Structure formats: C-alpha cells, structure tokens
Image (cartoon, rainbow, N blue to C red; front, side, top):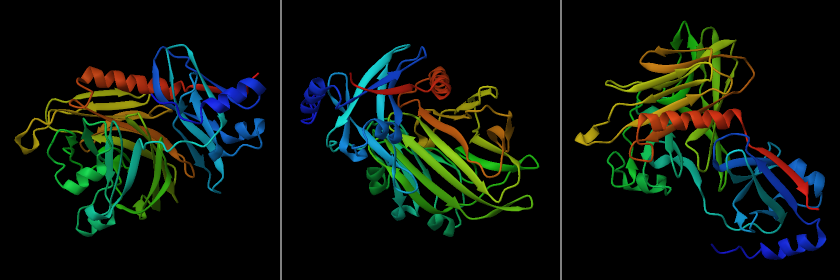
Length: 377
C-alpha cells in the first residue's frame, strides 16, 4: 500500500514537538473481532485540545502512519459536529490511531445513495455488502403504492446501483446479484408502521427527500411522507436512514409528528414455504431466513432480514403475514432501530450464518467501541 504523501512529515513533526498530533485509542471490550467499524469523535473534543485546527484540515492515520478514510459530519447549522473513521480491533484489545494536521486524500466512495428519477423516483442506496430502495411519488402516480423497504441482493463488492439502473435488467443475476425481493403493499424488509387496533396503518410512497450526509463512510438521508390518519390523529412520518460502509445494517430513526402515544411495529414480510424465523423480544430482535427464491425459473438463493431494537421489544408476533417487533412510541421523539439483510449467494450461506451475524450486531449495538483522544506526550 502506498503511503499518502502527507503522512510522514506531520508524524516527524509530532515526534519532534510532541504536541502536533492527537493519539486516538479505540477500545474493544467484547470477545468479538471488530473490523472496519465506524467510530465518531465529537469535534468539540478535538477543538478543546487544538482550537486552531479545522475539521477539514486534519487526517487520521493508523499506528503505522497509513492514512485512513475519514468524514466530517455537520449539525443543522452546518457546523462540524464529529469526524468519522473506521477502526479495526481484536477481541478484548485496543487499537491506536492518530489525528494530525493535513489535507485529506480523495477517498474512494464506499457508500452511495440518490434519487432515481429515471425509475419513477425510487430512492436507492448501497454499500459494498447490501443495497436497498424505497418508492417515490412518480411510482405512486401509476397506482403502485408502498412505503415498505425493498432489498437488493449483492454478491459483488462494488457499488452497482447506477450500473443496474442503466442496464434495466436487475431482476436476473448476471454475476453481481439481483432484485428478487417482492414488496408490494407490505412493510417489506423491516419498515415501520403505527399500529391501530392491532393492525398496521400504512402510509403511501414518500413525497420528499433530503440527503443529510454523503461521504466516503456514511450516507444519511431523510424521507418525508404525506399525512395519514392513525386513530383520530393525522400523522406525518419522517424517516431518517443512515448506512455506513462495511456493515449490513441500516440505522433508521422514525419520527411521527402530531401523533398520540401509540404502538409501532417494524416488520418483515413472510413468504410461503419453509423459512426460518427467530424472535427475541428481550434482546430486541426478529429475523427471517426466506425459502429459496425461484423467480424467472432460476435458483436465486435465500434472502435474510433482521430487525433490531436497541431498547428491546414490547413483544413479537405475526401481523398480516409479517413477523413484527413491537414497541411503544412516545410523541415528539425519534424511534431508532436497525434493519439488515443477507443473501445465501452473497456471503451469508446458511441460516446459522445469519443468526450469528445478527447476534454479533446485537453485541456491537450494546457494546459500542470506546474512543479516547489525548495529546501526544
């Protein structure tokens, strides 16, 4: 690997002065190897130690001096709120990194999303492992209505979104994966809906969107849905979706405006046949391994989906052909949960593989990496 040309001069300067860099220690208190996992350093912590530094004028290196991709994220006032990078740590161990002044390299994009007006206003997004889409207003105008999440199955580790849309032939596997996941008027792969009298209250297609962050490591975007009736309330839904590089799991934050206290459910559509289901309300997990998909008379393998609630689930049950995790929603708050997918032809070969990946993600969720920064001595 070639060293970035900004690495060595700042490192030598730091060695001489002892004050031109920050040591970053990333601690892993689990028995799980943590590979390429996103960590965030609040910019205020950096500014408190180096008030003259700017968020776009620093780089992060590993212990050997190799520059690591990083990304600055911003608050609503367009001020830097944190700097992201991805750390790798052994079980029960720490890893050392360094932040120092420098001009960041032009990092290769590892996550991507956009509106797709050429396909009825889909919003689609992906990283090297997973891809998804949701349906927009142009599709609703044709009469096809759904606020569920559609999942694409990938075997390629390249970003394929633009290529697949340009080819207009993504329902067959040409060596990179395919879209064989049927959503229709369902919640699909883990979308959320309010519950009224024990049934889903489904919104329509999103009406507006806003890309919040689009960088080398993180994509974050908001979808806005037209008001719909939940009981006696006319509720507006705002869905914030965040996908980082090198993970199978999206973080989703649902906010229901003008809502009364209510139950909500994130759910996975079930298929006919011998699938495998897991439910664990205490640890906040529902997951599903689909029967083999044989669309187009081809063996398209097995799709896997999991929904994780950080605070646990009130209960799990089947609702209208879905496997659902249920919780109470407090008005005025954002309800955060995770949705992830796998594919038997894309690195998740068996139901046990998917179960272990889900359990590992729960471990990460409940045991975030600990990040400490300090001036070099």
